[in-house]
Length: 210
Image (cartoon, rainbow, N blue to C red; front, side, top):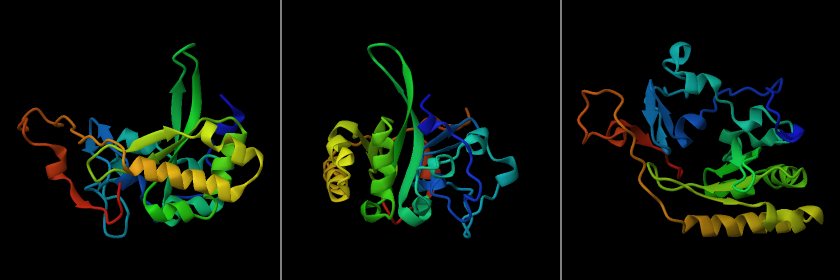
């Protein structure tokens, strides 16, 4: 694993009131399910978790990369920047080799203007870390995703920040037109009707997409 993506919790970076992962991500755990773009039903008005002390293992072990990677800028906390960065395991089709990369999930269009986005993306590309840009679909639908290293390499190597941002803007525009599929999760309990999907039991779609 590249030293650039060796996860280690960073002192001083705490979740605080941020609960972007409780909304943006699909959770498919034996104890809890929800599709991306919907608030977890255990989220309270102050963004805290109603079952924090007994939350599922999936939730206990997840940390976004803002909390784990020093080269992700301090300003990139998800609820402030609109960018949720997380680790991604990439497997080579040719060799079967595994590499760790990062996914920059832009939670809304305003995230393209987030302070530190260009610098954080450039740091990953310069370190030859696989970088993916993820563009959200409507709540309950899949997102589109593209590997960005080749498209960004020249702009990063020439330290051209405006060019980096332009590449990201173009990728966002293309991603918005990407194919979407409805996320269907199997019922948690056998007694649930096969016609009942988690989406009908989830609440409060977010104001922003994803």
